[in-house]
Length: 572
Image 1 (cartoon, rainbow, N blue to C red):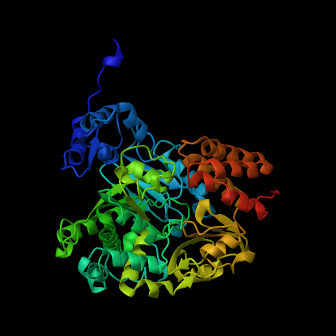
Image 2 (image 1 turned 45 degrees about the vertical axis):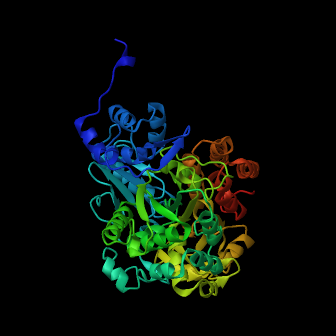
């Protein structure tokens, strides 16, 4: 029998799992193809894959073929997308799979010992459990993510092999400020509690002043992006607002996957209505009628909190065709990432929402002119958007009075590692590395180094604790603020092992699209293993100059800074 002509049918359970996604009223944009208007359904591919993964535990050949048939996507293209993501399985798995973090902070807390214990309980790696890069629970010093059939998943933090059913402990805000003042004090599930604490005052003020005035206040504030690139937010908004090409789109980047970083998760879980309000203001000011929030796949609790907030706001007239009766339309759609660090890069995130592999695109053109579905698009991360509430409420010039140089307002830092009280710290720009560590209870042991900015950041030595945590201050020591991670590394830690783990992280997370990054991250890991530190400068130069996106361009930063500090027992 010629098996090429054998058709594999989807099961009844698979078809039932897909129905809510592919049969729901379409919200996809109308695209002009060959002079004719067509309705694309390609952007439903990732939600459809998640429907199968959640509903039946994996994506079978029959299930994938059903998706292709109903969304009219070529099977080879759908397979390429499905195989791109770590959380989507193309092989049948147990009903429960445990993913255990063995990244930088959890390694310092004894992750390898936990993995050995888990192997003794559940069997060899690859059966009921597997290793994972950072899960964004670094404050707990150990974490796991459990995928189960019929569930969006759940976090276990702190993790112990005997605690697979234990809910995550909340991440503390150990030093609060304007962005975090409601967290832990107002019920994040209660819209009325949010409004009683000042919620929706900023949106009313924005509507009263008009879109142009809102953008002017954001420009006056000096607000720059908090995701790492530090691009002026008002300039980005103005470019999209002024474009005659329609529609405009807004994307909130909540795919926070940088090792050591968890601040955006804390904002979403602890104050989800604030993000909805901030996005609504951004949509109003820039003429975007639809916003997308791309939430990291390993953040099920954040996904649930935000989903509840969006549903409630839509029901209460704060989202929809006529927001607050003010005569403008704006609504939010939540998209769940599926385990790909590269999707934190804005063009890769756009490709993922559109139903393609999450691979970065060369720039220009920039998203402000050719973004989601080829239309003008604003892309901001969670922390950036949350700052808009204060700017509109208080005024841009008042906001700009806080901070130094280009670094205006307050900044959130995710502090973990060898500190007494890991958690989120909010401080005005200009606070030093030492100030932030002190706010987290101070070092729990003598420090060997501090990793600032996560895996894509840099190590600084104990003598650099007086460096201001500003864009300018970090540049003065050859580093960058990056994602806002501050990981204190104690002298008891095996720093060389941590640096090798960072190199492995970039090798595993490279999307493989461009040769400099794909081969460079591999060769970097090999050079470290062989002790050939003399090769790293050349590799870094090639990756930095020729990689398409920031992953390859920054993959050597922490490695080279660790060598320069003498943390690896060799010379640069």
